[in-house]
Amino acid sequence: MATPLLRTLGAAACVLWLLAGCDGDSGPRESDADLSVTAGAGGADGPAWDGTFLGRVTGAAAESHPGHSGFLLLDRGADALWWRLAMADAAERTIDAQYFLWKDDAAGQLMMQRLLAAAERAVRVRVLIDDSMTESNPEYLALFDAYPNVEVRLYKPFGPRHKSLVLRWVDYVADLRTMNRRMHNKLLVVDGSVAFLGGRNIADEYFEYAVPFVFRSRDLLAVGPVARTGAEAFDLYWDSDWTRPITDAVKPVPTPEEAATHKEELDELAGDPAAYPPGFPSDPGQVDEAMRRLEASLMWGSGKLLVDAVPEKDGQPQTHEELDVVGTTLLELATGAQEHVHVQSAYLILLDAGVEALADLTSRGVGVTLATNSMASNNHLTAYEGYRKQRHRLLETGGALYEMRPDAAEERALFTEAQLEENGMEFGLHAKTVVFDRHVTFVGSFNLDPRSINLNTEMGLLVESEELAEQVAASIENDVAGENSWQVRLTEEGSLEWVTVQDGEVTFRTETEPQTSRWRRAEAWLLEAVPDDSQL
Image (cartoon, rainbow, N blue to C red):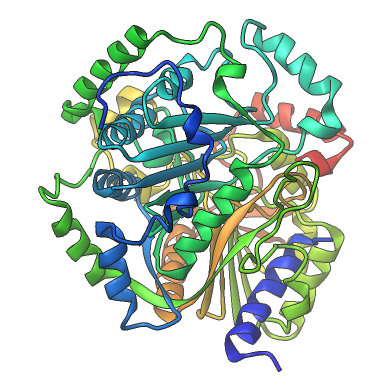
């Protein structure tokens, strides 16, 4: 018989599945062959969380919550970056980072500097990056790799970077069946004891820097059993057939002297207050002070690491008994939500089964809130067009539909008027979050669209905690408030209207995609010719 936790997680997971329509040395090195030893879960040296400061502190905290993990909601970019840097400063044995995108900007360079500082303390650092969105010549990643105790690998690399960006995409199209399946995961694990999962890549826009386009995103920091499972999941990707050393793709390999100069530049950047996002918390001074803050803020509950697909190793399937595979095991646990489902997805393109599941939920009296991007806030117009094709059907199910404003008040409040004007700032949604019955929460990299369902590898956390669910539901409800989103409704004539509702009164109404130019709307209509929504 299923336990109460499995029944609860299963009910939550089923809704998600159905809505998606799922079927020591300070100098640079020349080589570090020993870094091929598995390190995320300790490898030959034993578990990374045994005997480390983070392992002791998080282990002691977990003793009062047997079988549970602790979670901290990272709702704002400055906090999300601060905690990553603070935990890197506390690392003693291992840091494992797995991301779809890592840019060579302020956020990317600060993360790199902290990981290099950890490597100087003999911490083993491994970084795995999907190759589809790396720069045409990612020498910055090769410079990272050129340091002792650091190894960088690419997931499904396109080939040597002497090729132009155009030729790289020719290679991509030539092997579309294989290369189209990308690693969309976002994971950072420190000493096997603290894990970060959610929607943020490593780049300025995800941490709410004052840049022209900023993403509203969401992460969870996790400690306890689920963090250790995250470390083990990292190993499955790291050791897979689809990873290659960065040095296979970057020629020539950076020299030790170039790597040393690069490290000096990063250290100088880290000392510049202007390199950090607005609202960045002050330096904690001592890492034990940061951990006291963390212990006081953790919310405890049962958690499951969801991994959508794990690539093969030596041509053979890989798995782990603790992993819960989105789209395979979730349906077996399902019973369905009973009260309310909050869905927040940057890209919202449901398959037919997903739309039908929505209609079934609302027919049973289950409230549904759907939050996604507007045309004005969407960074991928092709994905928006896939959503727009089914928008009428979504509304006909009876769910409440909201689209983010590019001038969302909650985002503008993070910046000065001078910053907003100087950068011409606009905002878009990047969070991938679902809350079920204000009891179970999913936070991860998984969008509710065909690409996440059928093509990309994805990762996230499913957490049973009323406290966390209440916080996340409240955050989503704030995101869909009138000053941050438009509500999309059907008129009596069956057309669409965008409205702003404040204090129960409609203060704005239009039947044209708001804050968009005629050319933007014309471009969107032309994209209706895209024949295969499975690529969106």
